[in-house]
Length: 384
Image (tube, rainbow, N blue to C red; front, side, top):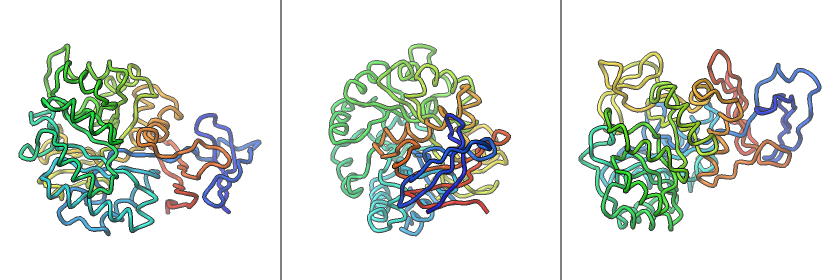
């Protein structure tokens, strides 16, 4: 049995949280001193993790040990569940990487308690500069049901999110098949027109991936694929609110238009997450990338062209609070209960008898500081 004093992230009420047998066995009210303790909230859930600590999931040399290292690294950021994410690549690389991760989940309990579902981001995306982002053009291709089934087979059925562009002729039929198979289809890296986006949603697409990114630098003012997705109430959306990918006004506008309930935060963190400033060679085949002092990940030699993300999801929580004028509870829910619902991960609210997947944290000077991470009742992270 373990007890930790904390304050509820929504009400601010002080409690002594008692953990036993993987559950919250008691919440004892603190009559005084709640404000002196860290917040406690449901653990964070990140739907888009490409890698961490110098390693990418898109890696021809990926091994179970690397998968384990990335998975355990999530503890320090308060993440109790995440989706290993595989970006556009040739079929053999995707097959290799996905199979290694799926096999590791099946054989390593410490990995399995941290990730159960996979996110395939591509290769069925736009080949246009801008929407394609950093995905290699030579491996972009139209949707192929046969290929997707092969990848799902080596994934042992664990692919639960597919990010794709609906701009291809066969997209509606393909989307219907994927959705009927139990996978969330998200629109992303797209240059689709209004009719194509509507057809995708009518066919079952229910999400937009990192809305506002993976787009042209200059687009028609209206209509365009950003307005179409923002206005579509049937689409939830994920946002990279790390202070680099989207300006404050865009985050605020999207959150207010979509509502907190239909927005989730993702880190989209790459293998450069957790790395000190410097120039590195990407293991995902992107060439050289540079981590700047402020955590911005760029093409080396300049400061504007992004090469992915390198900051944890907690950064997005405090930025969303600042940019969209959100409460702690609303911003945290966008990184916990919200994404958990999308992948149907059981992340109970903070109550007696609930599974103990928790994050204890402080917000100090605009920084999200993890005090402890509890995964399935075990304290898996305590800072030194």
